Length: 370
Ligand SMILES: *[C@@H]1O[C@H](CO)[C@@H](O)[C@H](O)[C@H]1NC(C)=O
Ligand SMILES: *[C@@H]1O[C@H](CO)[C@@H](O)[C@H](O)[C@H]1NC(C)=O
Image (cartoon, rainbow, N blue to C red; front, side, top):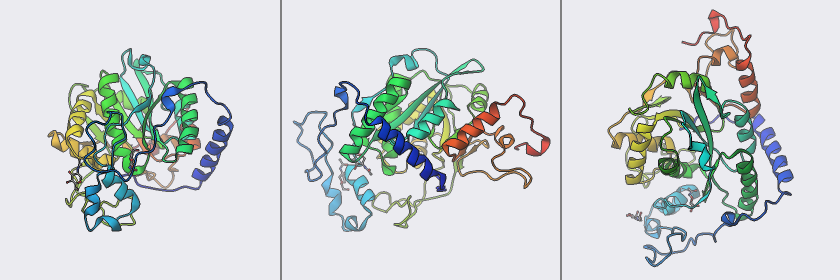
């Protein structure tokens, strides 16, 4: 689970993204037939679906779950999750050119982003997620996005993502509603995509678009690891269970899972895995029912495969506290030794990247991160 820490700067960034969108909405890309959205799925359909339906037909709601007496009092997004929990096949709307994974890929950066997060994607392209070689190891970047629930918004974002895809070739988009409770679906669709389109990438960083990742440090760490053995590291979370408070963002009612505890998992802000583990997760994800909280779901997949997540001290998805009162928590020296920190505003990411790239950055003993 991510630790939310809302910040006022977010509003500014959203405003800037909105302005960029307004500007972009006047540019209409010529003919993109694949972008036409199919009709909205019928909410009042029956289960099971007519087997004669085409494979590409929208997945129908499982209405038998709505007969449960506890169903009607659940928050709307939880009801929505339960009705469509069984749906896993969603059309791929766009993907990068095959050249993305044609050569060797050492570290594939697979970053979950929402259609509207243009500002975040732009800054990551310029900073830690730049496609480049680090100590001879090639990095490749992908943004994983869904679609907007509102068809009019979806068309606008489709134009935006088409422009981005053409300029940067780093968008993977599927036709499902990009929402918090659909993050697991995004994860599962990515694992499937990777098995066919980028199976040889040695390692994957899966993370959010509001983290600061020290990709140089990651490569150094991963160069000591074997891609064909189990590796799943991040901010390890253990001995927690479902939050049963209906107003919580992480509320999971008994109707979703009766279990009172979660297996160990790594916080979803960012974690690293090997290609061995990507295959194992792909296999498990096919067999397990979708669980709405994506990082917990991966913990379930690991457990099903008899694998364990591990902790890396350099991954701080719950935020950081400065090691000493003399050092600001934004001091680049403090981030020099870390792998990944949640959460950064776009301008902070740019400043930190710039500071860390200064050859004259000199850090004293006081700033060492243990
Ligand atoms: C539909 O919901 C019922 C009740 O929760 C459940 O038993 C059944 O497995 C669901 N069907 C599918 C295909 O998920
Ligand atoms: C997930 O996406 C599907 C397909 O767009 C949608 O039917 C469903 O309502 C979404 N679920 C949530 C919880 O947003």
